[in-house]
Image (tube, rainbow over the protein chains, first blue to last red):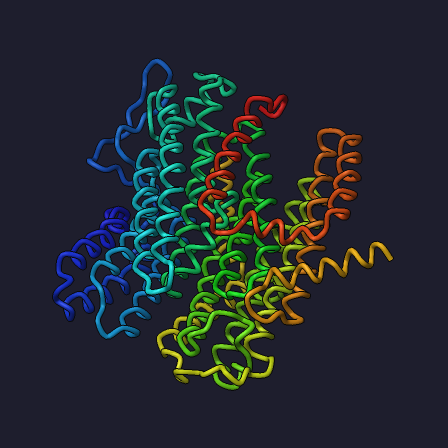
Length: 485
Length: 111
């Protein structure tokens, strides 16, 4: 049933349009949003692996060079896409569920943004066309701006505007890079570009090819929130609604891995590509965690931690071996789940206290023990404590960097994990274990049940992936093996 | 006592970092951890230069260690540079683009 492959993008996109168009009909959009949100994680599970050619244009063989060209926009669906699209679908369902149960009046345009973002990241994962990737990258950036601007948190508009202005630099530069690539290869299909490069039809050290790498790489830094865009990325997380932030960070992780995998296929012949990825990943790890250590706003703290964790993903991909890339992708999957749990959990605390400053909070374990314990486990998973999922991926990354001959990177990865642990213990102590300040009023003692449910589901995933990592890593490893051929 | 005074001065400077609002023990401990973390991690990261030249790695590591330790506190400076100012974000975005271009142009054997 390869027909289901395009439906993974079409269903959320159509739902987004309908939700926006019929936003006046409250009951209708509630039902539609919930039904589509339930369908999203199911479609990738039902679909067969394979390729989908839009318009039905089959690949053609060039009789002179024997290269197979792909005239159609091609979607490629494999285990890696299945697991990530399934996880994004699950997260979208949980976020939509929280949103629908939290507010009496739901907004069609806000749901439009959530579903459009999901459609965009799904397309980014599936596409084998670099221009198609750019189009959905732009749609995703706009959806992210909208999700931040639509939140009721102070200065969210300002932060969204700053993100858009920075995007107006990052996106055109990436497009320029794609333009240069098109100019020298004559195609935008990634498989065709790779075949042309490997066939020696273009010089990989030509200035135009190198320039395209530099420009697309810069656009990727913006998409993934690696330095110098880590400040704005952590800023937009802190200014979005907690469930929105949970989805936003997953969008960032997916756009990071999908773009970097395309870049990896095209530019992996150049050693400098991997050097650049490792360099920016190390900077992200150092800056992200050190900034998180000094934060008093816990939303911002999680934002910086999320950026630091992105460095781990980049590290795995930058090392470039099958085991390292598998570790990086597994880390990406874990980060999506763990950070979402933390954003939702800390959002529940904001909901109960209307306070985000850790210095003004305390004694919350007595009021919210369930949330406290689930947050503790989530934080430990992020820090890489066994037997949780974060431990498995970080252990793989440490092993990968050791086997590649970079013990310094292993030491750095362990140090960052320890620092992450310190950040989390400090925050957890301030919020949950320290004496409750006299002036702190816990306004709403009941945390929304939908938030607790979402945290529980994510917690089960974290524990399951920690206990049985092979379920995911063996499939990802096979995919990466195919990528490196 | 000079080094002790310098470290004590660091703690005092951290107080300003958290203003307005009270400064708790956990906050100062966190900032001190960040201070040590950033120095150690940059020094360890500089060891990666051994893949280019062992002599260069040794020199850079030593120089960085001395420069970083003598210029503590680093965290307030890092924090100022990473605030939500659009000017600073744009500045560093352009600097990064320039750095990528430099890496690609003078990448030598890596390209």
